[in-house]
Image 1 (cartoon, rainbow, N blue to C red):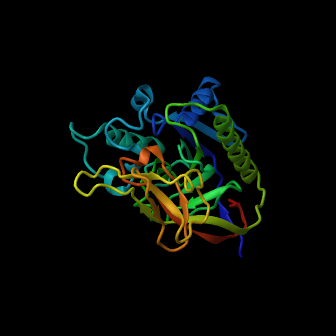
Image 2: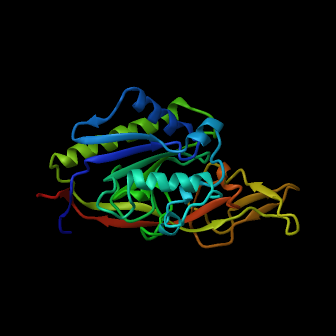
Image 3: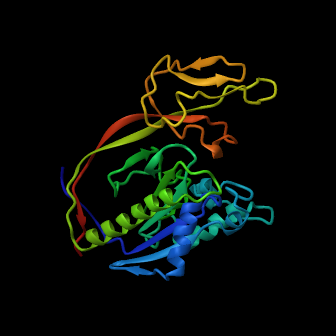
Length: 296
């Protein structure tokens, strides 16, 4: 494939606390702020705590999930006195890090998250770009205007998410894994800005196909089953027809009946309110071209 060139990544934001009870990113950003990290080599870095009221309350959000507030439609919605706090904060962040889709936007936003699911270290891409690290990549195929996460405000953006870690808990191993990923990202950016040409190749990605809810009582919507022990903690392992996925509270097993797909975000705590037991993805290969710094 032909070489693809990009301008330097000069202005980068590292954001944590978009969800206030996901503590690895909160403490990484706090430590960067304590050390007054503002410049690493050629990269100007802004460490930002995104949702301070939620962090103080150790809650995912106060009124509305902030990481669903950055679509063009929501960012163009006029604010009123009754607007949820997170929507008002999204407008502030769009002004600070964007405006979304503009030449003035940050070159890159790297947003830090935790999951209670056993997903290890992965990046979440909500619009097409090229991965910076050789780790699992979840690619959500959506347009820039419909991308809803804080990282979509920048010219380029992605989330680093690490689990399993309970909400409101800080694990040293998970913290260190995330910190290493952040350090590798900044190192990569400096090498890119210095003119290093990165060879292309094939990249394995997981592309979300659909979500699966828990079995529920049709009258009360209460759960009637939990994730089956044979599915629990087996994120990214192929799910085949006949495999157990739920165990009812009376002991019956519910088996999977769909096409072969890869489950992820299995039994994620934050997704109970969204009525999601797990997502299902197809595994695909993307061909990545060689990339280099665009010459002036």
